[in-house]
Length: 107
Length: 89
Image (cartoon, rainbow over all chains, first blue to last red; front, side, top):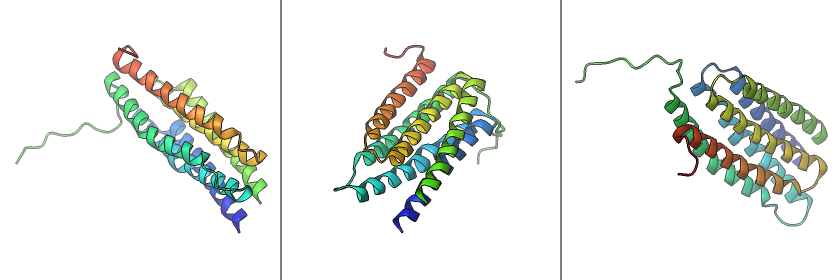
């Protein structure tokens, strides 16, 4: 039973990591590309680390807490680096595929 | 069961590494390359965690934690350089 759960978590994590990098390689402008790897860093590595925590907690004595540290650190730092990357792209004036907002008369 | 899942996961994460390396080499602008480097270190963490499960050794988490910290510092430093032309003002 535990083995099935572990296999499912590992496969889900690897699939999300792959999809994140696929988005990074395939999407067409920088602001959409920024969206892809966030899945890899939260869902992908998160699933893998949960699987690893389960694996090492059931295998040896005591609960394995190293993974929680890595997960916490990644979840805290991912939004910061994404924010800084978006700021750098805006500063350099990269073009976006989205049309510019239209002027509407204010009511 | 677990070994089959681990093999498939190794292949998928390896493909992810190749795709982000392609974006790193190709990327038209500097933020694209920084984003590709960011994704590469996250893929490296995933590979290390998988290797830890495969070998049954808890030794690799220290390396994963170090890569996470250094990768974050690297991303922030590169972004600050692009934003301000200087890292520590």
